[in-house]
Image 1 (cartoon, rainbow, N blue to C red):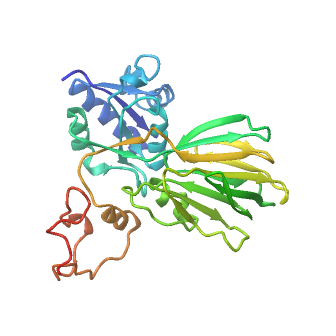
Image 2: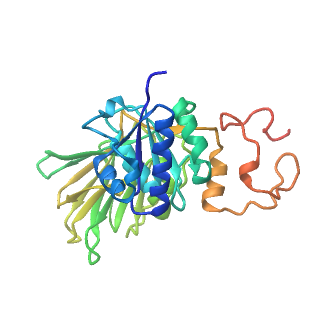
Image 3: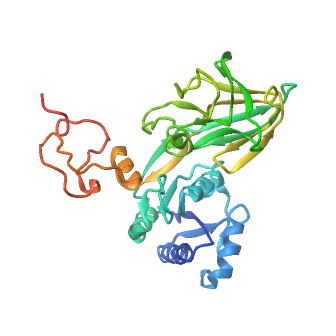
Length: 328
């Protein structure tokens, strides 16, 4: 097997994450792989852990196109940063949760060493997640900003005193106008993030859809919407409320929205790639991450659950099979 180049993305402001980065880099080197870091990460971690030594720098020593994988040590915010770093390449992202919820992470920190060993061996599947392509046009119709989003594109008011007034459009046809604190346009991946907090539905990752969730809207028709991935959603900012807005993509990339700005959102032709070490039912992930109450569940076998949901056998394709279908 050719030498693997693996990007290590870590949150350098936590002792446990720094220790984990040292372990991961050491494991990669002993396995004959080349650890790579973004310059800012390498600089910050080198001050806290000189034992890391000289590590290849992304963009200077190793091109993003040459990366085989990104290993992320942190929570969802760090995983979103890694997705941004590898966006121009094809490397999938493997998240090791060092945060709290860590909904995007594949495994918890207790299984880190085994996960890194499998990553070096290429023993993982790649799951492609729908991403959003986002454009901002000014009042003259000129494109002034472009980005992508794995979780969501959110249009928000930029000051607490006033709402923003928006016109919502689907497929170049106006649907409704209202004043609101904001609007969240989310992917299935982001449906458990900001969209969920704003009152939107949870969407299974296997469903190809885009959700539109108004935030604190003053309107009769301002319920969350779910549209197919082939549809285009746009929002135009009006000035009747006196407020101006701001666009956020995944809470990381931002652009101010003056009166008359138009934000268009549609499915990106390039998905985000996540590395998966083992199949897991999304239902189990929801229960585990949100600590949902399932005690007393009997299921088709009639045996009451008394242990953690994570030990329940699951099928390889997340779908119903002859073994887990409900009896006639």
